[in-house]
Length: 528
Image 1 (cartoon, helix red, strand yellow):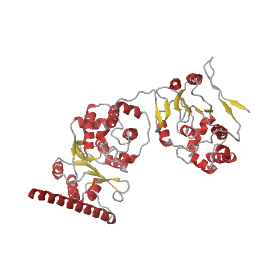
Image 2 (spheres, one colour; image 1 turned 180 degrees about the horizontal axis):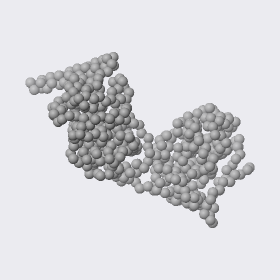
Image 3 (cartoon, one colour; image 1 turned 60 degrees about the vertical axis):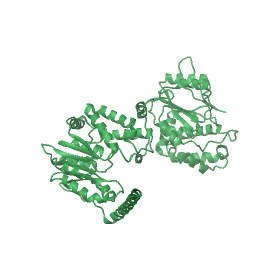
């Protein structure tokens, strides 16, 4: 039997383990068939591993045929030891190693893989599995290295560089561990990921020996009753939410944006903002400065950084937004540096998530960390953002320091006395109402006409009114609009409005009926 030996550099007077690889394809074996199914939640495991920062010259060690190449497709390393105690898996690994280097096309590789499995079906596959089923199980998952051309190319590149070593690695052997550690040190490499999934169980002393390979950034995937625990054993354990924020902020997680629809509205999700800001920039401004009234968080500050405003009223009705504005006002006033403010703001939102995200049920700390990263990246890079450059931040800060920004709880449809007071303050330069009119029209229709009157009292000849509207009520994304000196049409097509208005009237009737019933019961109790 021919033998292929792969060796690697090591310090003088010490030799690294030289893995011996069989190139033969036996036709019978007492070993198990290759593993085609797993109970582990691989997408979550791989996401967790890949969420950690990448080292420059990382090494991967793994023992799972189904998992390891899938991780390498998403996490670049310089070297990978892919091991298996199953002879049939090792045989297939060797076939992959030889075939992939000479096969640029993923589709061609899949055809060859299907032929290889078919030619030795009884050797590779468990009874009951067809070759077609095996191919589907290996390629169908979205996390599979065979699912996309990009993932296939990443694995192929590492094979081409000689970076993947298929070795009967024995982590129970102290000399093996010492040789691995010394070779990595000599080459300036670090152990990035060590996955013990499907490895032999280590005793306490053997695990202690393995820790010679660990750095504070080494990721360890260990079997647990719940699947695989993905940790950094040598990294300090966060003791406070602030420490947890900084630990998670180094990582990259996926999240579902819909989990963050609601208060606080950190990002105004309307289309067309750049065009609106360009129009605003072309509008004449009063040398004396005008008034500003606005709803929705960051859009207000973007406008304040661009206009000559003598007083701004930033409004909302949600308690979580009131708390947010209170913190922002204090922090901006006391913080000279834009970068420092953004860092403090992001940490504040995470550390005190119970205050600012009262409705956050589905997303955990990992998802919140990822969401906040995206939010603050938008703040720092959006062309018209008040946090994109120092001058814009300084403009908003000066307004706060001079007491020119007032935060208030304001219901645009019902707070008539407050609206009357605001209307006497002077001329409004900009009024920004987002899509409030849509909500009032169909959720508080009894006050819709009153809301229109309120807006008319605030809009003068040169007032810029910015709102947003969808093509159909509550369907799709709203598009921002700009109107000067009057109100736009807030209504929708009659066929779209009638069902919603009828629904509103029915709900109001039911609510009124419950109220009358409650009052009647109270009167009955009083009389008796």
